[in-house]
Image 1 (tube, rainbow, N blue to C red):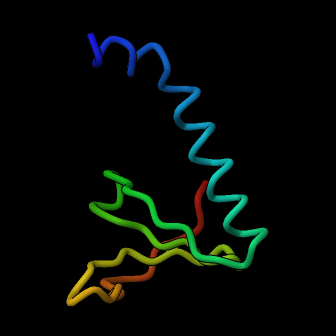
Image 2 (image 1 turned 30 degrees about the vertical axis):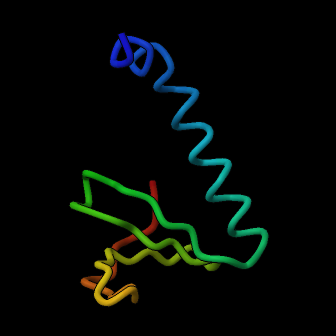
Image 3 (image 1 turned 135 degrees about the vertical axis):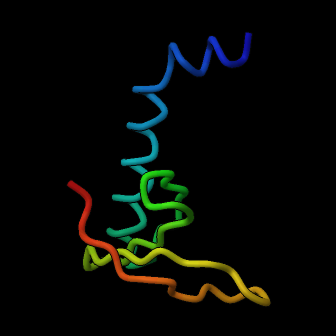
Amino acid sequence: MIIEQWRRNQAKLRQAGRIAVEEARCAGAPAYYHDPREGGVVRELPDGSRHLVEFINGEDVVVREIGPRL
């Protein structure tokens, strides 16, 4: 049942994520989200740069730089 609801609302969930990233950018704060295409957690900075990160001892550590969202 939950999976069915998620499938029906995928577009709304994605839109909510895009709005949250844009609000973080406007506030001058990084946004963090999971992107399975990139293989983990992405940190997107207000300037649009993006990094795949891992968390080690409570700190985010850049694994690699990734390109802008398309």
